[in-house]
Length: 426
Image (cartoon, rainbow, N blue to C red; front, side, top):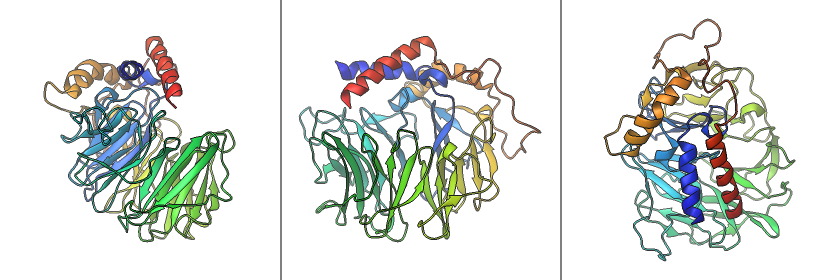
């Protein structure tokens, strides 16, 4: 009953785009399809934006279609064939038609099947260089584990980290060695963080000591990145150490052992990207940071937008999330070298909802019911591909989404109920 109510409240919240979840419209995640420079997905606080022409045209997918709502940001991955994967409280959501429709992985299995993950909170997500899809679960009141799929998210098998007390929240696969996987988690009683590693795709695991790592009241960890050519160099972040939204970044060059603190931020770390001989860390209002010594030390990156996300296209072009209004006036920006940043997209340039067949939730709900409101809130006029930015800052939509941070009353009540349910589950 609680699960059904939570889903219903999430969908209600998703029905009020932009401010329906109580957050100001913003971009906060970017995901590039492997071997495709033109396919870019941008996560926002009001759904998912998809471009298939390198950012010239962005089309919107609403939260309801993906299967979540409220103040939640799914983790996404795009497979080489274009399959989209998204984490939610109710399982791994999968789209095999470019975002028009999403289904929940393993939903077809009978209740009681140990490999059925539908209805279970999936938090960790990463694609291995061999195409394997790795996920991890973090659901209260059940045995959590790490799972791997070798058929593009159709079936999953456990990878040997089952625990009734640990929430496996984050994982990353080494880009240069598909069998090396790092997984981070925590337990609450007693509070304890966990970091584990496998070098043989889950046949054996090593518990990595966390000596010297500082924790918050809840020992939250995440695996930020693994070096693209050295599977033994890994970056881990400890979250909310000082009761703020800041994070502490740690580096190990020994497979997770002997973690050393290399950076403190005042906002969550969104991404760590390897760019030539440099390493870039995007932390939104906490600034963008750069290392020129392999990640041993970091300093501020001058001239960067307030990057709330960062990724790199196959051709090496950097793609980042700036602020749509002050101070950047760039919701999405690109740079060849992290020097000068060019505006690619602002919310006023939304082309419309993703165009899908009748009978899909994207067409019947996102397009028919929700898009007119979102269009009016942003005063969307469509793409301005290649057009230079206007003199001065862009105008805000009159009376629209950006005049206040308050959520509509009905959506706000729904989100309060959803937050209470999630709190009980966590």
